[in-house]
Image: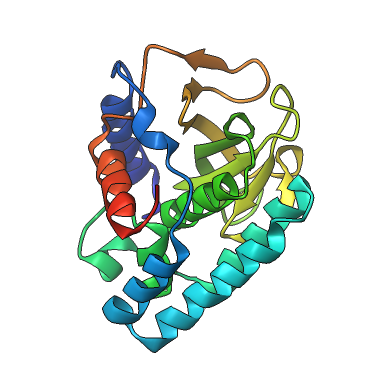
Length: 233
């Protein structure tokens, strides 16, 4: 995402305006299981040989991770996407200011922005049977330029809560190492969500907004529909 306080403020108003106060079912967010054969075929036909190989590597990683501990699954998924995917801006990749790519689109292009990384990691871990209550896609303000900088950038990460009531570790495309939130003083959480609801604030005292939902957020619904068409169930 673009840096700058004004850009962040406009972005935050847009997203919060779409999320807060929206009620309804979250059933559309429950998909997790990929049809590997269909995804592999689509990768080859849509994007070519390089994308096909990336999806094969992803499948191999997922199968190897099935027998790992939950913490090791988190580390493995984070490392995979940070290693094989380049960072880029939506405008340059998709010709849009804010496009949420499916995991297949991300691997097909081999490039994505912070939302794309967080979304791909979320669904990979759900497919590996990491409980939903331990995962939250989180919007943050990220301090750019060191601890004394006042430059803030809108950013998205994935939080993993080994203890759902405790502090998370952070899966971030900017840093390959999975670090506890207590070691990420450069990040200020704004809100987070998963298929169970929306939270505002940060830490164990976060308040779950059970009257709000991301199910009718247009970009998220469009993402889910495209994933289902690609082979997620």
